[in-house]
Each structure stands twice: as structure tokens, then as C-alpha cells.
Length: 241
Length: 155
Image (cartoon, rainbow over the protein chains, first blue to last red):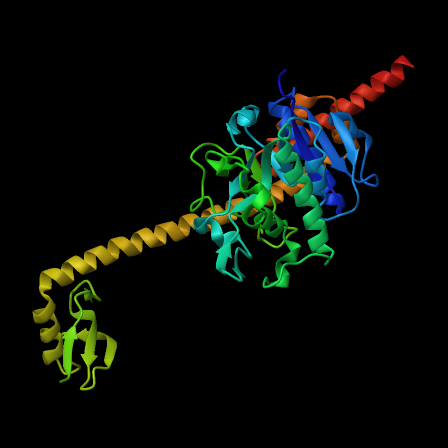
């Protein structure tokens, strides 16, 4: 049986994210009218228009990182999670499913040459300095694989615990606890049960997650931008991480 | 024993080649290294030839200084061009963010939010400037008003 395919978009905590999410859904449908989209949002934000354009709606709690809960709750086999403050601007969005290959999970990358827009990337560990390498702005994953399903739930649970102050490993700077990148790093680099999780990076990944705070003269994809990220927008701080 | 030498990267400060920009490296008796950046004129204030200038040019060579000057000019030009390009792209990105926010405000207008005319709404989303946003927004609103009028007329 063919795997089901769909997008997950999460709008929680701030009303603006709901507006972004609706725009993102519509922009995907502009290029991919058959796309299935699950909108994950809070009851207080939900409006008839958003409900109408989404394939289905899941109600989440008011949490800054409810995106991870939404990712874990995906009703689709192959899921493309996209941060709400993004916009689709290219027809190649239809090809997203081909990106997965034999990987379990795919992200875009945090790299040295893009580090001028990261507020915090390097950090100390008891074993020495290291850095975040995966960006969770977009994530393509296969929920039919038990390891992926478990990973998504663990990512959410660990992030919730770390942000609530209930979990933190010794020897790490406590200020990192606001980043879901840290829990992602921990699970992928320190949890032995995920050592076989096949993590890939999107081909020409800037096409799939192009932060508008990037300077196009300095950082640009080989192909045209598919998903543009307004994360560093005028109502935010100018940094993406 | 102390030593002094002119570094090879000297370049002409003026197009007339009457002033050279260079670095003098000095190593003192106990091996401490000092570097001084200097601009040396060919003539002093009274019009006499400056022996330091002759020393630099003889030591490094006229051709080498010419070559350094040309390479530096090319490099500086490229750097200036890159800086200009980055500033341009930065401004474009800021403008795009403002346009994005402007569109989101337009999508909050009831008639635009709920329009069934997806192609027109898509055009609004793809608008390249505020002028285009306004035009498509107006078209959608007028279409919605007309539709409502027709519905009321049928009633």
C-alpha cells in the first residue's frame, strides 16, 4: 500500500503564528492543490477559514515548542513539517517526498558559512567544544518506521522536560535549555538508541529552508527558493537560532 | 644581533609613485620582533630625496611594488563591490519582510480572507510590491462586494 503523504504546520503560543500558518498552508496549496495539510493549533486561535483549508486540525496546548508534539502526532506516513513563519514560493514543493531517499529523518543544515545569522551555535560539553549542525525549521520523516515515531515523541518529551527545568545534563550551560536544537543534539549524539537513526540533509537544503535574514549575496541556494523562512523578520530579533 | 628588513607587500600610496606604504620589521638584540607600518615620501619637505624611500624601493623592487599596488587595487575594488552587493541584498531582504507583513495584514481583511477566488488570492501572495498588493486586494474586495450584492439581489 502506498504511504500517505502530508504536511504538518503548527501554530501555538502566539497569535501571529496562526496568521503565518494559514498563509503557509495557502501558499503550499497555490503550488500543490492536492496537498494534505494538518494544522496543529490552540483552540483559542482556530478560525473557520483555517479549519476549512486544512485537511485536518489537531488542538495542542499552549507551549512554545508545541511543534514537536504536532510532529509526533502526524497522521501521515511521510510527513513534511514546516515552521509556520515560512512561505512556499515554488512548484518544486511537490517533489519534497523524493528527498527522503533511504533516510529516516531529514533536516536542513547549520553550517559554518551561515553562522553569521546564528545567535548561539557553539557550546561546551564535558568532552570539549561542539556545535549544533541540524536545523529543525523543516523536517521530513517517515512515521511508518517505529524508530522515527519513538524519536519524535522523545524529542517532544525531552524538550518539554528541559524547558520546564525537570531535566538537564551535568556539565552543560543551562542557557541552552531554551533550544529544541539542544534536545535534538542530545538525542542524536548522546542517546545510543538513536545511533542507527539515518539522518539526512536536504539536497541543496537552502532551497527548502531559506532564512530571509541570510544575505543573498553571501548565502544562496543553487536552485530557486522553495520555502522562505521569515524567522528573523521585523517583529523578531534578526537571528534564527 | 639586531636586524631590519622591509616586508615584500609594499604598495604605492599615490598614483605618481612618490609615496610608498610599507612595513618595516625590526628584530632587536634579544630576538623581539617589532613591525611598523610606514608611509614614506620620495622627497622631504625641503625637496631633498628621502634615503628611506630609496632603500625601500631598492630592497623590494619597483616592479614588485607596482604588482602589489595593482593586486591591492583589484582586491579593494572586489571587496567594495561585494560590500555594495551585500548592502543591496540586505536592503532587499528587509523590504521583503515588510512586504510579507503587509500582505499578512491584507489577508486579515474579511473579504480577502474568505474569498473563494484562489487564483487572485495567489496573485496577491506573489505580489512584488505594495502597489501590486493594493491592486489585487482591491480586486478581491470589489469582487466580493459584487458577489454579495448579487446574492442580496436574488433574495
